[in-house]
Amino acid sequence: MKTFQGKTLSWQVVEGAIELTLDHAPCNEIGLAVLAELEQFVGVLPKLRDEAHALIISSARTEGFCAGGDLRELFHLSQELPAAERLPGLRDFIERIHAVMNAFDEAPFTTIAAVNGLTFGGGFELALTCDLIIADKMARFCFPELRLGLIPGFGGIPRLKRDLGNALVRDLVLTGRSINATRAQSAGVVSQVTAEGDVLRVARQTAAQLKKFDRGTALAAKRFIKPIPYDELRREVEIFCDLFMRPAVEKGLRKFVESKEALPYLP
Amino acid sequence: MSSLQSTTDEVLQLAAEHFKVPREQLTADDDFFKKLGINSLQALDLLTRIEHHFKIELPDYELQGVSDFRTLAERIQLRL
Image 1: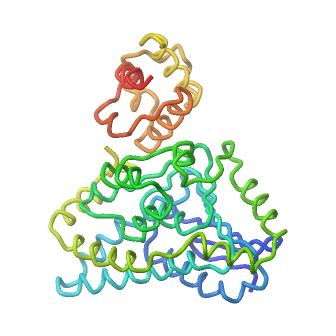
Image 2: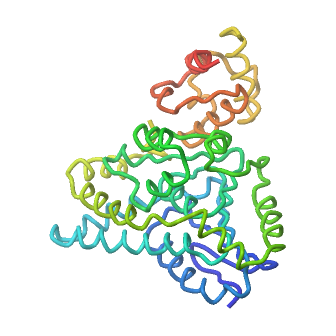
Image 3: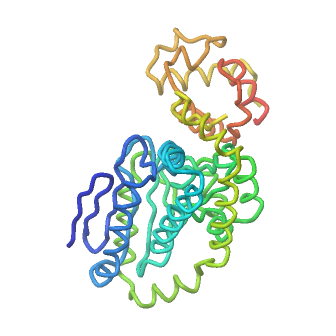
């Protein structure tokens, strides 16, 4: 299978690069529907290793790459469950997300996040699984989770720590503020900044360059440069689940869900 | 360093161009959410354009409660 058209995403192999396009209104929020199709996609990845040398993840949404986890869905699903089943239900969801994120991180070829607009929370975490993040100059990055009484739970902290100086990790996580693409590039988290609307062209050009090199050598280099922080990722699951069960989170989520604002977690 | 007046003028010009509102219809005391008809997502877009234009970094929490162009320009001025 070289193409797939799902309800929330699609992918195709174009000149040896897999192009995974997220397209789920309003801004590719990761809930059960997106997660199921991402799982389907990562399940196919091993079969594509002989056909592809790169993976580009991008968004068809002009609003952004991905606004993060679908908090409204998470809140409502959590409320529907009996109290005793909430933690196991949450843990199952988080474990599935981590399995998908790890699969992207471990992908046997070079991965590129071609990001535009909002790249928040789980969207930022998805981008951080990639070997390269290429950002439209209008992209913004943010971990707003603390505003909800949570920490990033999709693998964001260990992967951001892996990629950044710790001062900016603390700044982003503890203040919840957003940064633009130029700032993200100066911090070392974005490797190239493109003109507005030009991110996919540049990503494709980069993917074409990657094709010139021996895949085995590229994979060896990637595994040497970018080790996966499995132990910290496990610790993150525990901390996130512990925090999620606290009353402050339910209060924060309720406020979020009931807000009419486009981005109610912003100040 | 630019004066507050020139910073305000530049912000008004930037907002007018991007949100396609005639410049002469915007004044420093206008509520930009109402006057431009934008939501917080679009305000974030304006913030990104401001950061690029003035070559500054303006944390979004510094704009908490800011809704008029003059105060926005004052916050920018502090970062120039």
